[in-house]
Image 1 (spheres, rainbow over the protein chains, first blue to last red):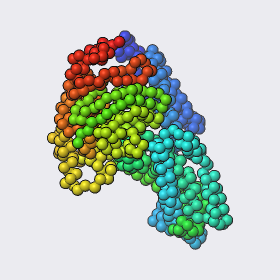
Image 2 (tube, one colour; image 1 turned 90 degrees about the vertical axis):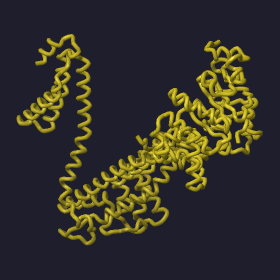
Image 3 (cartoon, helix red, strand yellow; image 1 turned 90 degrees about the horizontal axis):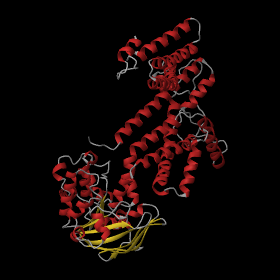
Image 4 (cartoon, each protein chain N blue to C red; image 1 turned 30 degrees about the vertical axis):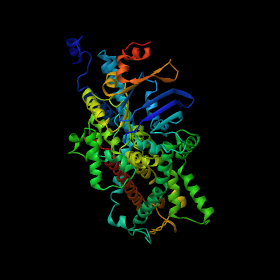
Length: 350
Length: 259
């Protein structure tokens, strides 16, 4: 089939091109070969690998056979990029599918509204106490880190202007980004043990540990957003006789608001799943505690961890259910971030 | 309310680099003064020093004297913010505030300084400024729409409306038409003619015909050589400047011959 195209179209603009169904045909062939290999006893992983290799070799090979080197290179790179993309996405989809499959059965009104207080044996328990704890600790962490982060970013962009202090701050923020979360937790614990009480375990400590992890993310994202605000706007405002602080508050921040809010929400969804620092500072408990400043406080990640550690059938089910709830919360937060970003984005009116 | 400006022995530095040297001129009230000259000769720098906008760039400083109606702009007791309230500026690229509507953009100078005013008063200012900028008829039905939705020429006139809404004494324009098509340019030139009766206007332009059309007096800036500071070569009435300039370099530049 291809040879006829070449002989009739040789020298024309269509010389050396593959028919439009070529990628689909080669994909079908690769899948068929992989399936055959699997039936013949190859393991699933190897069969999939075989199919990918066949596709990546066959399609550019066909193009090369048509004497079109440029198209062959293009096909090869395109195939490699799609492979890399799948390698990145497949585990993600797999993870979500697995959590939904395992956790969906556990979800029930009781699971969402009961705590684990006095739950023995096969009695119904829930994650209400952990959800409340996660909510309170995360909101507190955001309350601590958002002002610090945004004000730091404002200093770096509007006042620092590459002076020595700004460079030092930028460097320290970069270092902070790399702090292992357990270290943040131990730091918060040590801080409150030294300051208040050697046996202290409280939700506020967890919030402090989480805000240590959040601040660098908030600084970084807000800094980028503030830098995106064109200097033209600042100059326009100065030229109207507006002082610098008002320019920042009324022109720069509103212009960058969408991006900053998105960055903050993404930072929240990044720390909401942290386990280690909360395990260390907030501790764990079976009962509902709504006071951040007193007693241990359960959080979702710690709940998942302890239920899993119970190693009972009920415990595994609760752990999967908790994981599903946590993923749903993170997804809702991400969607909210996108929505907020859209709402606050400067409008063009066109 | 328009005021005159006296510039004497003005040197402008960016860090250690002397960008403009020894400028002396007097800008008359209620007239249009044009700055012309090749790129990099310091026209915009001088213009920006007139309302202390060059201070936005780190390391920029000024030596010499600039006085508006007898008051020096660079006394240590002078607040740059109050200088800018007196001397408005329109930039090369239209820069309406993207978060604000057309209405809010015009009022930005008042609102950002949180001046209290009644709704009727605010409406008056918006209508007067937009009429002053020849934009009222085009936008009166969509004042609540974002300013970024206007065309480039309309945006530039919106920026002019925003600048005159705070009733400055002097209006500085830094190549206000360089990003605009001939029709918008002509609209803005007409506007400059009208504004002349109330404001002192200083305009930087690369367009010689524009300088000839709109200005009463013209200053020609040039570089002695690459890397040397820019300086004012000639300052004269526009008529004389374009018909019979005193300086040979001016004539060479205006007639398109260099060297």
